[in-house]
Length: 209
View 1 (tube, rainbow, N blue to C red):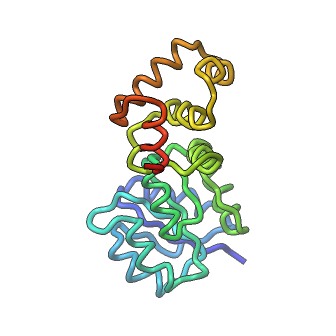
View 2 (tube, one colour):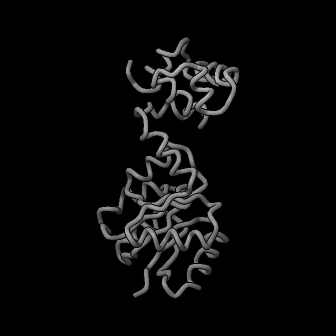
């Protein structure tokens, strides 16, 4: 039995390209495509596709807002975000709204098919760097989202290690970088978080103050 899909994407070439490529695979059938979240919010509860490929940045209502609005109406529909956004805030917002997958638009079309199949089979496919972000956040203390947004991946990693009590030298050895490089990163962390020392940085980022 075919897996039914809907595509919500405002860029014509992306929307039509996805539709044409996915339609080549007899395992899938594209029920319809939509250029706006408003149109999708009206039609998807009526069509009830198995999977919705959803862009985030749409004219008017965003893709995340659309999912939040209709998810309860289509409990059996799986939502796959397909977007250029890879910042933590968008990822978590999409997952909290009800998305089960999160792919970046640089994902290859063959990988897209594999991800759709995985999603339909109960998985949560994500681009590798998105999955890495989630692991980084959940393997250590929960960071304050506003604070984290200002930090690079390396700075967030070093702050996580700082919070465990490691010395600069130990952090350098663990990350295979020089102690001087660690100091430079920590200096930037302090600047971005507007703090003066390790304790203030940890309190600021992990919400302990």
